[in-house]
Image (cartoon, rainbow, N blue to C red; front, side, top):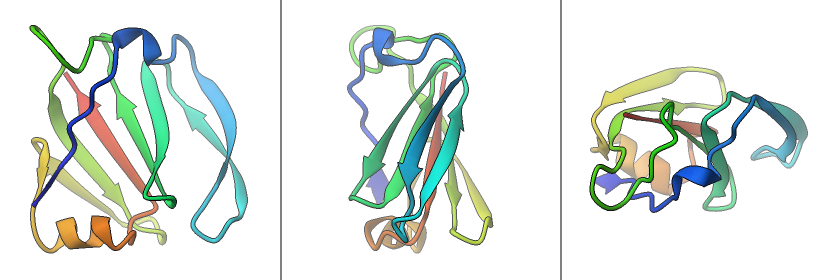
Length: 108
């Protein structure tokens, strides 16, 4: 089992659509477009993780935003959608093995 447990203040999420350079798993530079109200980072040195927080709420404390959906993307573009905040086998192992190129985490 794998579960994301973000501790992010609401002000860290983007206020507008943002574009930046990112190095993928093959160290190829690509341009990434992020929508407003998002926060991104590189997980385990090779997986792009993007939190989507439409209300820009804190992810901790009373009235915190909670994870409602995860979207796991393979390098070939295939996607796995998971409802809730926990990832179970076999996908949890694939997260740890850095198989996915991107993980989108939708908060509410």
